[in-house]
Image (tube, rainbow, N blue to C red; front, side, top):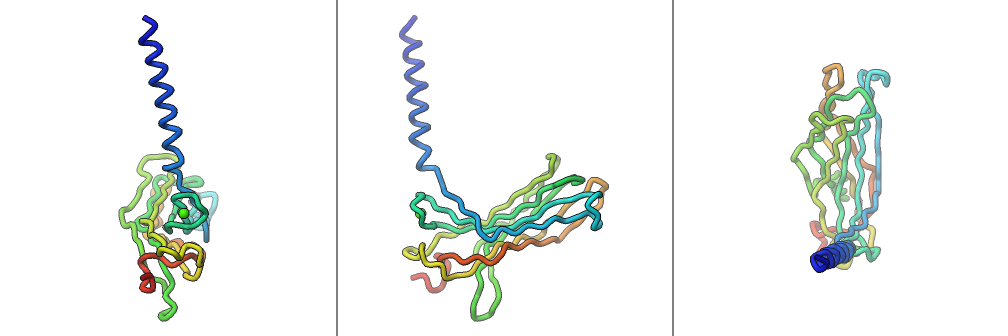
Length: 183
Ligand SMILES: [Ca+2]
């Protein structure tokens, strides 16, 4: 009767050790840059309903060596009060083009997110991540921003606010593999 019990404990301990050993490999250091947010008031009246939009750039350090490996955009639309449903249609990571003085899309997530029935109504969306051009992880000479669009809110009283946009601040970061100058 004692043997199965001992075996059981060994299995549990082995499982814990495996879980702990797996942790460092899965850890990704995430740093946030250019976070910008604003509160939208229903009909301009904070008492009727409020939702908070944000957009930001995320630096991902896969191996936690202090050197950025990937970049992505993140956005959010979160109820403060008086919201039935929140949604985001599109989140894009954009890069500034010096010659045209405009931003262009590098990575886009077009699959909309919707809070459906969840309360409070909170949605988040991430663009796909883009890798840093090899060897350029410590040179911050490119300008990026996050752009979220088709952001929508269905308020508790049934009114709908659609086609909202939210941008991060401009963020300096390394050249990415998508850059024409990346060999
Ligand atoms: Ca790294």
